[in-house]
Amino acid sequence: MLTSGLIASIIIELLGFLLWIKFARDNQNTYKDITSALMFIVALIILYQVFMLNLDFGLILAIATLFSAFAWLLGGLINLQELQKESKSYFFILLVITCIRSFAYEPYQIPSRSMVPGLQVGDFVLVNKHAYGIKLPGTNILISELKSPSRNDVAVFIPPHTLCDVSATDARPDLSNLSVDESQLFLKKFSSLQKSRCTPGGIKFVKRIIGIPGDKVEIKGYEIWINGQKIDQNLLSSSQDENLLEETIDKKIHVIRTLGLSEYAQHSWEVPKGRYLAIGDNRDNSLDSRAWGYFSEEYLVGRADYIWMHWPSFSSLPSLGRNKKIL
Image 1 (cartoon, rainbow, N blue to C red):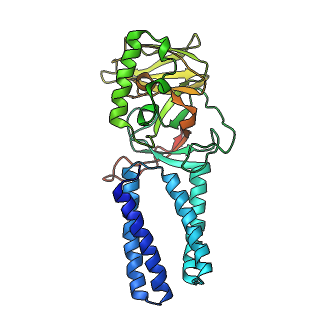
Image 2: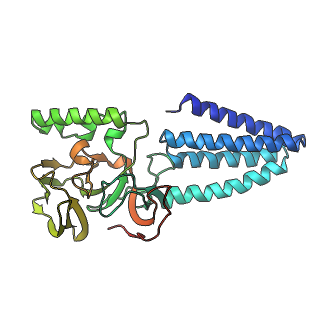
Image 3: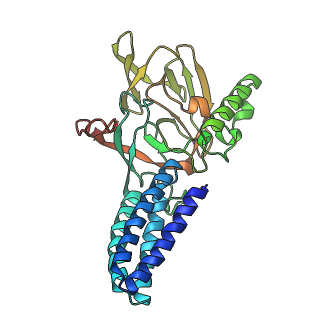
């Protein structure tokens, strides 16, 4: 949802664009340069508001690309070569960035400790945007065939509780199969999470997929059964602070972290069609399917493939020491 502040900033930017054209045609270079500087400042304000509102940056890039193409054509219609030249250069730069980000790889920063030890806060990962099918920039509209995720994929997606128009029954279509106490507990928890976290466009999460459509998944403490088969877990190290275990799902190995807080937790799911079950590797510090249910294939963003940089805060320097493929 656009705020009045963002709408006002966009209007000011468009007025500045029209003034720039006027000053350029009248050869009023001083006023043109002042207008350019002010437009740059307003553009930064717009970007800040976009990030604060959690709007899809891919959609913003696509709109900017189309606007630069429009400005390029407008420059030809009104015979303003300076507008043509600048718009043309911006158009090709934006087009390349938009195509790479929308159809190849999108950068994503890990915001929490839910995937420790594999992914740390401040890791910048490359999200494969074509792993599950290609979508129109900034939308959930597939323009290619859906490629279903596999178990053990570290996926980026939008979970249901972060979307204001998703109901609890969308998050758990099998809600009627639960006991009255279980369903009431889930409804209460989902409602509370949605009330505190939802936005119109949702919030991107990164978790490991452990259940695909048709799977029967059970969790007892930290042990997991998928379709009746217990997944292998081998203790790597143990201390007062944490336990690290090597976990194998479909012959793919990764490391999980436990703190001993969920020893007696029990969960059971039968994953519906078009839904996926995802949990964090930091099993005692992850807000995942155990709390908010399944996520829909409609809200798949991509697969996290590589860590390409680590930058935990602005007070520290970026590091390439953690660069690696994500397991």
